[in-house]
Length: 99
Image (tube, rainbow, N blue to C red; front, side, top):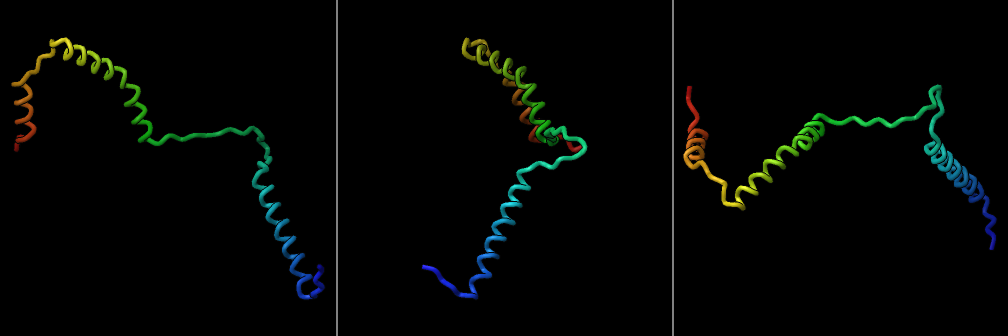
């Protein structure tokens, strides 16, 4: 069935041109710009927070070694707690000097 309405003929041309414009925009977005320096490279910038996290992670091997050492001491029954030292630090931390 064919509709011969003169009011609808202009609409099909507008719809087609809109589709063509959309396709051109998509193609332009996919095509990288060509400039004088055609060498492309990616660049990554790490925030200061990420750098601090990375530094903590790098120092974690020494911490892991200490944790392993403490685990072995506890499991073997050779780990000794300095109760007087812990109590002293608790008191010092709870009541800071008012100088």
